[in-house]
Image 1 (cartoon, rainbow over the protein chains, first blue to last red):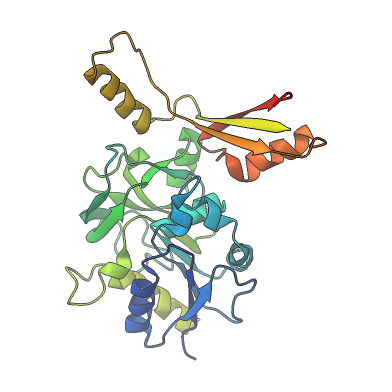
Image 2 (cartoon, chains in turn orange, yellow):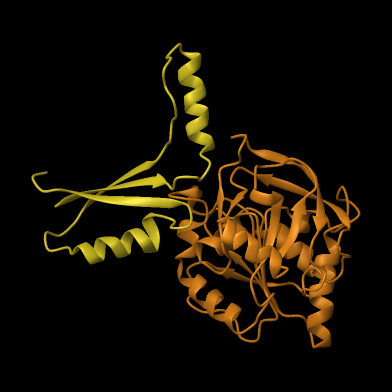
Length: 225
Length: 79
């Protein structure tokens, strides 16, 4: 059966097309494009992606308005049923604001927008998103954000590390994130939020293809299931 | 009724913006500033019967992010 995915577009999303192209490139099937004001998701989705961008102009806090938009109730409900949800950059901010993931993303410690390729260390290699990597492997993925400074209390951070919910860590100084966390999984492992953009490292015309394994593994796992 | 919602970062949460403002103040020659924390002020004009519970709920559901921020509600009765 064909892989059935959806990419959600909020007003101000700007990586929704990149995400859709990456999903189609890897799976062979174009994702369904869903608008933030839609009340329901298409039936039978295998995968939901929340793209990067500046939804609602980052008003109030990055991701805050998008997290309360009509479609997000459906995303929260789908995540609860175990549908894999990937949030990249602004998508990660939306997932924390929607409380699908713990913590918050604050202004970068250096105050500047950071746009470059960074080295990441894979910390979890057993989730549907990260199973195509080896724990401890270094991969290179671009970042482009102003609010990527991950914050959570020590208790929460200890729990995330103890439960293997830290998916990726920056291997170099980046944005001031606590414990250099670049991506986190929810407790069930079906929701991943990450600041780096794996959809920008999928094809050979990109600077690298280290993001491809994330999509390949997710799609393989879902088609086999 | 006018209501002011004062939103501030929780103690212990690093405030890069406050630090940058502090640095700029020092650059302008202002000495004796020990620390700067930046927050946000939201003014609401609400129906007179609005309960404290409803205002709290607004803060907790949207206006503040309880992971990193505290809020204080101030009612301006005569405004």
